[in-house]
Image (tube, rainbow, N blue to C red; front, side, top):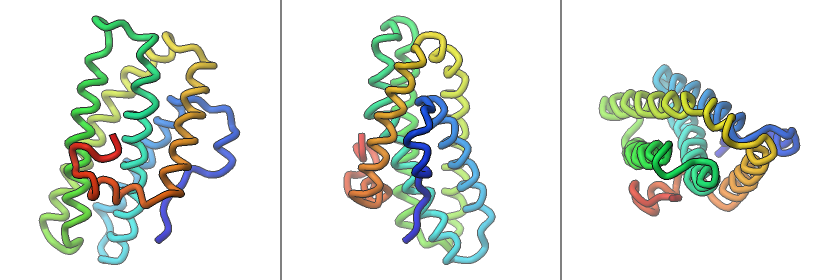
Length: 178
């Protein structure tokens, strides 16, 4: 099954972690919209596979590389609470994604779950992006580029070793790829 992948050239483009996350946020929003509009079951399954892989990879990149990479620049009393809230959002998103992957694409429950996931992902992305200017001020460009590189390496590993969306099902929605 074909899945969305970061274009090969982007592994060398010098972009930083925030650029990568912003791009993934836009792509997730587009895929969720397309999934909600898709009328045919085969289109829904194809878009769901692409969305599931991207969302699983996105959450893994944030949890394994991005959030831990913020620690030196963020004081304990200042902005660390957003990391806790973001990871809690991920638990909800993983649960909803697991539900979608196990639900018949022609059911009303599927459509309702797509709507809830779209709302959660948009809310999560908006909250993160409101913090990006502060992160840009606190993390140097070389540090953000290094995080971006590490995130792209992890993305490549996740996409070549498995279908990332399957990790959500295998590990359970609260511990998947965390």
